[in-house]
Length: 273
Image 1 (cartoon, rainbow, N blue to C red):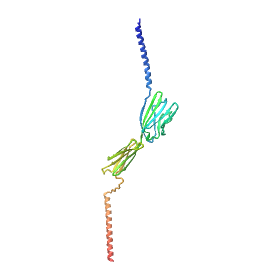
Image 2 (spheres, rainbow, N blue to C red):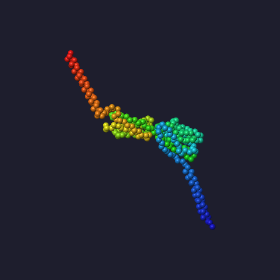
Image 3 (cartoon, helix red, strand yellow):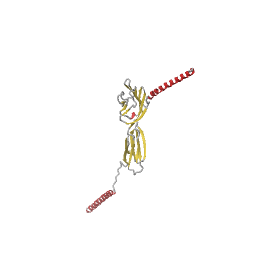
């Protein structure tokens, strides 16, 4: 026969077991719901040549997107954005007046952004954010624009040689063969490119030719020049020099003989007179 105290204790234990079972069934569902939350943001770096076409994608874009936004921050800290709403199939451009930046195709089919052609001013950070019922997807692109420099090499004053890497981005690096007494300076231009000038001098007069090597991410270039270029120097073998001296001496003797002969005939004619 059960006593009232034991009956109450048994009822409490049964209630606790029921509550634990209920919590055990609820927690996996909550974990499952939380596991479908998409990643917040990812970033990639991209380098492209100037005057080319580039397409920036939203890798995590889904078909149940509600709003798609491209937010751009350029290197000069100016910004613009482009939006697309799937509910009314409309786009909006906020301060994005550059016609070279546009949707790659119809935004209802492709959320990608294109830049055509790419300019040095387009360098910056491009972020695509997709809002969905399950959460927000974000992907950013650090865009770097590469500009190949124009390389020239010429003789300077006082025996110097000058190598230029003009209007490149990023700045080029210049080295010489053979190494000499060199001075290199950089000048940042108004279009965000850099001109590098390297001036070299060689004390050893035995150096007849030098080479300028320009290293740049868009490709390397090498130019060579003769140090005595621009000065007229006649070089003859020893036999040729002897011939020249002989001809000069012969001409000198002929001139002397002509003068002596002319003087002799003048005296004869004077005596006859």
